[in-house]
Every structure is written in C-alpha cells, then in structure tokens.
Image 1: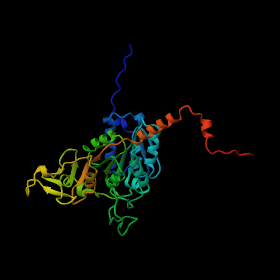
Image 2: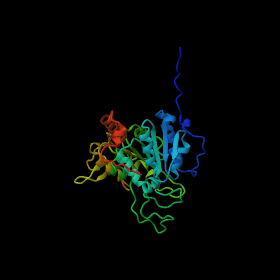
Image 3: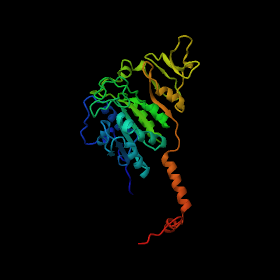
Image 4: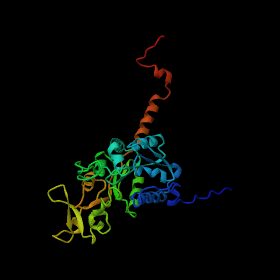
Length: 341
C-alpha cells in the first residue's frame, strides 16, 4: 500500500531566491519584499504556479528576489504582459509589481485598461512619489512644488492619486497601505489574492535617497494613530491615540469631516461606518490627505465576473455555433476571389 505524505508547508524563506537583494540600504522595498514572501507562504502558494511580472524601475527588480516564475518586462507594459500570461493560462497565479512612475506615466494606459477589463491579477503599486532608479525626477504622483533634477524650480503639475485613478477606471478592489505596516499589509495582500478579478493595492514606500520622509507627516510612529484611519468593513471610521476621533459626513454636504467623540453631543453612533461596497465612500476616503487622516486598508471591494470568465463564455458560444463546420468551406464563404498568375 502506497501512502502519500503531505508536502511540507513552505515558509517565507522558501520564497526567497538565491539572488542578492540590491536596493539602497533603508529602502522600503525590503520591507515589502519580506511581507510578500510571508504572504505567499501564508496562502500556501505553489511556486511552480506563481508568476511575478514587473516593468522598469527599482520595484521592477522584484521577480529576481521571489523564488517563483517571473518576467522583468519593458517600461509600463507589465499589465499587458501579465494579462497575456493570465489569459493564456488562467490557472496561473499572476502578480504585477511596479512603481508610480512605471505604472502611472508611460504605463498609465495599460494600468487603466487592465483594471476596467477586470483581469484576475494582483497589482501592487509601490508609490514613493519620485523616479528613484533614474536619480530622482518627479513622477506622476509627486506633489506640486517638488524640486528635482527635472523640476529645479519646483513642479507645477498636480499629482495623480493612484487609488482615485483606480476607482475611476472601474477597479473592483482598491486598497492602500504603507511599507512599514508589517502587521496590516499581509492581510490586505491576502484579501487582494482572494478577490476574483483585478485587485489593486497602493503601497506607500519610502525612497531614502531621493524622497526621504515624503510620507513622514502621517507614517511616523509618533503620529500614525492621529493621522491615519483604518478602513475596515462594517466598523466605524474611528482613529486617534485614544480612539477619540472619527469621520462623519458633514451635515448638508457630501464631504467628510473629523469630529471628536463625546464633544458637542457626538457619540460613537454618529461616526460613519465603513462600507467597502460603496464606491462613493471609497472615493471620499481615497481623496483624504493631511491635515485630514489618510485612509488605509481595503477602501473598495465589490466583485464582478472577471475578464477570463467572460472570455471563456464567448469561446464556448463560438465553439457551439461553429461545431461541425468545415474550416476550408468556412474560409471560402462570403466574398472571395481567385488570383490567377
């Protein structure tokens, strides 16, 4: 009698490749890499069935450091390559990794369409609000006034909000986190993986060389409690070191405002409860920026059939419609002509 032993469960270390990790010391990408490797172990990912696809930039080195299949593609086109991989073999688990410059500048068109098509991919955008690999030029997410080699007198461009753009592109799963949220980020990545369709996660990441501390006003440990609000489905949007603050809809408007619980007759029951299926609320949360608290967590999740499901149905219809037809006769049907030499 043959007994099949259970395969030993993989750990985060099993998803680390033999390549030397080469980012600048202190780069936030190290923390993200650690979280992704842990997440892959937690979800019991099969390395032989997992693919990481990247474009160009610091974040794009990711496939080299994950012991799975991977493709380091061309600038901004990672979503297109990943779509082709997934549609060619829907059984593969495909992750897309890119920076704010790669995904939102030259790759903006591909980013938009992969979300609206709802291809079943996990899309991770590392946002440090700068071009790091090419020495610190402004990116689409850089704030107005940012001084850089490409904008020595300060940028006059308004920045793109990645989560707002994703919602506008009809993304069905939109989340945000920070590279140093080692306890929170794995759960967000697991939710993204469970989602059937395109899932988008913006990860705010510190570039220690060219944009150090750009998010410090709401990510430093000393201010996090007062300047971030965690969006959890079905729970009130409460924050603060003493859990004394909350968000509510401003009376007579569609804006969010911060209120203090137990002051001016405000009770916990007056605080807005997060509904991740509400796209309008997700848009309001995605737009929050200092001095308002910055929203983290799953902002929006409302699954619809994925692109692969629709494509499978069309293929089945085409097969049924043309079953038994002679290919040669079909190609010669309709308007044809003969070329005589």
